[in-house]
Length: 180
Image 1 (cartoon, rainbow, N blue to C red):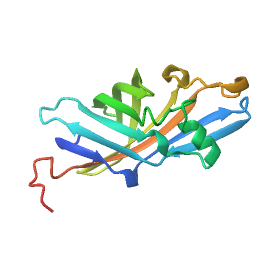
Image 2: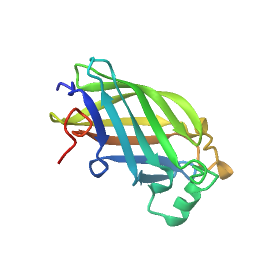
Image 3: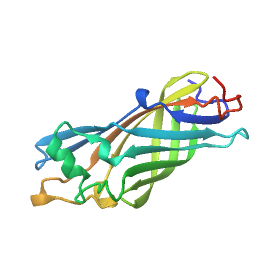
């Protein structure tokens, strides 16, 4: 599947995108699953054929694990501190398509005011002339981002992150008139 897209700006379609997390807790006996309900993003494919770039932004307070008390704790200063750091942002400085239908993503992840380099491989799971859907599975070490709260050693390990992001070409910004 070719992943070459027309030049222009793209916007994340939040209704067709999702970001899910999974983390083993309670000394590895329980798996907590959740999803960010507020996601946004933009991308740009340059006309000169250079690498695409973009951002994926998650509202920290939108993490929903299905357990209100836990979600309140995750928003607190023990974890995301969503009042002080309302967003988690992945900035792709280079998104380079490969012939096998994958995309090499190079960029930075910022969580809780800490920015770390991150290299990912995305798989193109859908594509039209105006849209592309990329799926990414990765594992994040939450300690690297100051999310080290670990009462009685209950929360060891890494957090799995699964992203399905659909970007649609913004006709108003991609050389069109911007009129409906």
